[in-house]
Image (tube, rainbow, N blue to C red; front, side, top):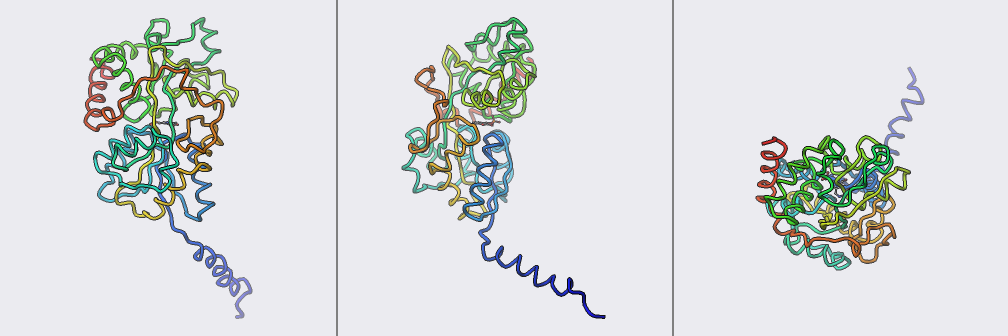
Amino acid sequence: MKPSLSRLALPALLASVAAPALAADAGSLNIICGVQAEWCSLVQTTFSRTTGIKVNLVAKGGGEALAQISAESANPKTDVWFGGTGDPHLQAAEKDLTLAYQSPNINLLRDWAVNQAKQSGYKTVGIYSGPLGIAYNTELLAKKKLAAPLCWTDLIQPQYKGEVQMANPNSSGTAYMAIATLVQITGEDKAFEYLKALHKNISQYPRSGSGPLKNVSHGENTIAVGWIHDVPGEVMQGFPVKSAAPCEGTGYEVGSMSIVKGARNLANAKKFYDWALTAPAQELGLAAKQFQLPANTAAKVDPRVPDVKRIKLINYDFAKYGKAAERKRLLERWEKEVNGGA
Ligand code: PLP
């Protein structure tokens, strides 16, 4: 029997498809992404398109990312950890889970981003910054005849019972920063008294730091502890959300990036790291409607990026609260005295 045309054509066709793919094979890169989904996805597609490197990406909160990288340390599956609050990146550096790398692009960055690198022995670097605060749904507040909360102390008032959400600090870097911020403002014992009082007003501790604000936008929650820089993106989508910079003062994140020690795709990891520090890569945050202050001094700063001159920022002690033992101790105390209801 004569072979059919399709059987003859198939190997040639397969070869023609496979050949250019092999010629352009730039390998792959495995990223844990700690910012919001839209930004993660833009980073993934843009880097892939410009380099031919296949990017596998999973989104994780800071606490979860740290736990995963720690669990995989004998056999790392992740190459780069992109974004999320700086403390868990510093904790990973201290535990020697991440690799020292001094990118040639580090001199393009603002001082606070470089300081993050210096204090970790170049095992992490700042990629953006933004202030922690309060966000609220204006329609829900009006409907419930509640005033807008402006201070941390407002959140523990009885009229807000069941109206507040903060993420779970075990999984979320945002919530860990909130605890560390309160400890720095009032001292530790008073902060834990506050957190116990806040617990009475909390309806839920979502897993991810962006959860409470998303719930505020969707009208499922009235007040969130979250990022002030995440609010303009929600407003752009038409949600009735406003933010307040707490009157007592507040902390700010230095969103960070690290290369995992033992990364299997190290050359690609360094390529990504260098690229992520460039102005065009940093502007992808803005393209994804994220309004952090970019670390690169040449990256565009949108007018909606929170003006920190109008916010009472504390001098957040990254060295202290970026320590693994401090995180463990504060989380254990929170579990025991607040979440466990002692
Ligand atoms: N910082 C920014 C700007 C984010 O978008 C997020 C999450 O979406 C985080 C930090 C930290 O997330 P988490 O609190 O879940 O660790």
